[in-house]
Amino acid sequence: TRAVYREVYGVELPRTSRQMYRLGRPVSVAGELRDGDLVFFRIDASGPGVSHVGIYVGDGRFAHASLSRGGVIDPLNSPYFDKRYAGARRVLP
Image (cartoon, rainbow, N blue to C red):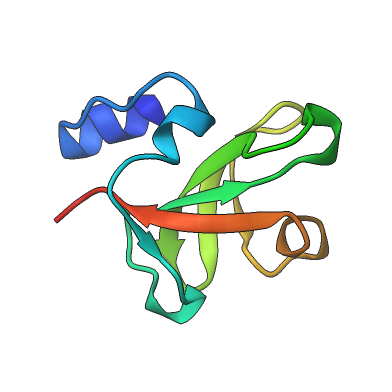
């Protein structure tokens, strides 16, 4: 996420997803997501709070880094991510 934001948008993001979650402004309705919005998740094994981040790419999908699959694009409404969704933030204007 950090590398993509730096390369594509010229924006340097903080190192952790928890730090990124404090940036920009919240996008409270999933239907209002725009390309480039950061989407956040609470992954159970990681303890409380936000622990995973991706970049919304449109059509209900987001790009992120998977430990087992590398860089991937997944649907936000997949059973795994849907129940772990923690919100979104708009960093770009």
